[in-house]
Length: 305
Image (cartoon, rainbow, N blue to C red; front, side, top):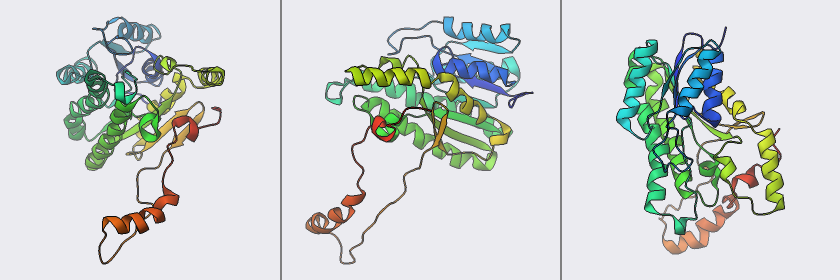
């Protein structure tokens, strides 16, 4: 018996990395799986291939599970609608969508092209909109549905050279929260995961010195895609129906619950503010609570457990 017996789940980006490990675990936990993967390069600069999705679906079937493959792009709304219909036609329904599909086009912001920006936003943020919008009416009608979307510490905390990626990933956090708020009365839930895992996306990070090389080596050994898959699958289970609108992280064997933006300090001037008073009074008073320009590695300086 698995935690997802009888469920039908669509997994995007299911041909590699987190998506592949999640697809395999979904099947082992009893789900029928639609494995989607465009089969493209890390930068999304080619037309892709059906091979990766087909290979994972074949692996699931060989192990005794039920799976179908799909090689359409999450950035295409009509294509995502076809994925939803494929799940219904092949397995009789759809209960959850896990959406780790993504690309990277890292560069310093002053060197970023419009194409670099647009393509990353299209795949990550528009792709998350597409999978949610294409299925939300079904989930509302059947009063059951779970979304597991993917954010990143690049957005939650910050990483240099990833303005496009960070903007998309923070947008997904806002999207997930509103979907969760609007879906609550119909038992539709949505959560996001910020994964720490050695995948081809992380492997693209440049190594600048020996210290960086050692850190990357520790990351590769201790942060695996299959560890992220455990939480993604758990969030689709009926036993997690009370969990919604949360931001999680998975870092090796550690699961992190992130806070969400809430006021931490306020000041009022009953006579009204002007620029000089703000400069003289308000900003100095708030300065001790300002956030530093920390990157992910500053917030998580310790080795993964």
